[in-house]
Length: 135
Image (cartoon, rainbow, N blue to C red; front, side, top):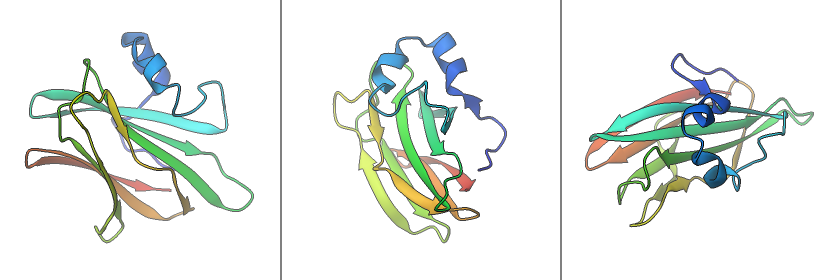
């Protein structure tokens, strides 16, 4: 899998925001080396959030498992922040939105094949940020 510039390892996020580790434990095991774990800090409408993408390394079946979440870099996400999974053509495949007291929102786990493209979009009050991926 390929990550664009600006992505950083989750370990570096914990070095500066150690309180996030407990919130993220439910998503995956940090000691599991079979996953590639990265984040990117994104600002939407003055709110700083971390887009986290976790991918399994190559599997015998060729399918790569992917998990994604948006985590508040403060206490809680703004209400109504949207995390979207988009196909290569831009079609909406899945979407989750934050409620009043959510520290994070997470897309259901999905799988893809090597060289498959997809996008993750974060949106709030008409502003959005999209990241494109190649598995």
